[in-house]
Image 1 (cartoon, rainbow, N blue to C red):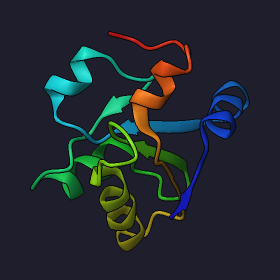
Image 2 (image 1 turned 120 degrees about the vertical axis):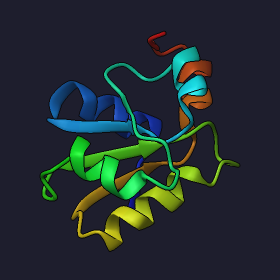
Image 3 (image 1 turned 180 degrees about the horizontal axis):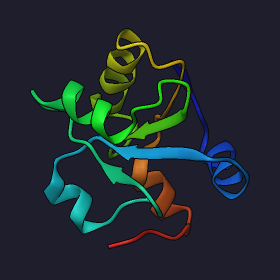
Length: 107
């Protein structure tokens, strides 16, 4: 797993075909999330749910959570690496950084 910055993610969202995954619980996802993001919470069903949501292990996937202090996205990214996903990135700064930069979010 590699990391990705806000600027890199914003550019890739405009130009690349990728899957954006928020790994927080649904209540946090429901408050706001990055445009086009899906919600796959990092819980006991994560392995099964991520396989269902992203069946192609060659697809580029960006995981994120709340902010740099949140450890859910690094854990999810490492787990995806273990499951055989080849192109996983962690947006470490998270959705708080995205919103504070004035970029669009969905509710």
